[in-house]
Amino acid sequence: MKTKLTVLNTMAGQDFVQAMDRFVQWGLEVVDLKEHIFGKSVSNLTEEDAIAASRVLEARNLQVYSFSSELFYDDIEKGEAYFRTHHLEKVSVLLQAAGILKPTMIRLLAAQYKHRDAYPNSMEYIHMQAPWLIPLYREAIDKIHEAGYQVTIENECHDCIFAYPHEIKSFFNELNREGKVHFTYDVQNLWQMGTYPSLQVMKELNPYIGFVHLKGGQSSSNGGALVWKSSLEDASWPVAELVNQVVRDRISPVLCLNPSHGQFKEGYVYDNVTERDLSYVRSLLEPKTL
Image (cartoon, rainbow, N blue to C red):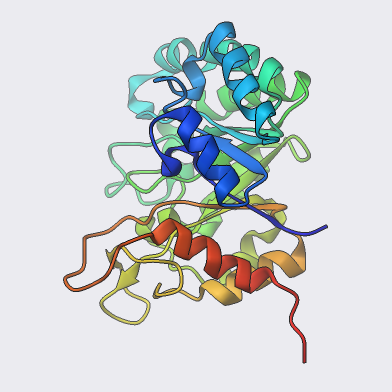
């Protein structure tokens, strides 16, 4: 099956109808819904909002691939009761909208902790300070899976419990929910947390990955930290090699392009970066002939 492309709906503009028109212009078939859906995030859609959004999508022959919720993106120091009220209980609202918009997967975010530098192994910190966290994720995963949706958990770029492959593997192994949940490898986010993108990292995480997010970005030294935002074609990390690996191993049926983090680089042209990224990744996905 051919790998499809999408972008976050927010990258096409804040007006939802105009953004979906732009998706059609870009030749995209699937949508990753996050925010700016009639002024709301995907986690806060009412039944009426979801119905209205579904009509916009159906009129343009677009399908929802992912619900990119912000659920579980919080400091675990806030405690179990807070996470249960502000995150787990909101899964039900998310599922009501999902029943109308029919996404393939629903995203949860990896939690954060304030003492990341003091406790560099997140799993040790979770076991010591928040033994309730993984059981709470299990509850959310089971609830979403029972409703008929795949779950994915994405790494974030600040104080995230995922910074290194061994943490990700340990977390998913302890979840013990194989087949119900997979890892969204946001290449640049994990880079910002300390793991430079490479084929070795991709291979190590291969059994856990089900979705891949691509952002550009440039460093000031080979293998160094992210400094400047850039297009994918001009990125410092091996974009072509990783995309080819994803396609060969059928890791991610859809590749989602995200806007690059980093500083603006003096003299760099940032015009039409999304269109440039789409064109570049499409060139990588085209069948190669000798």
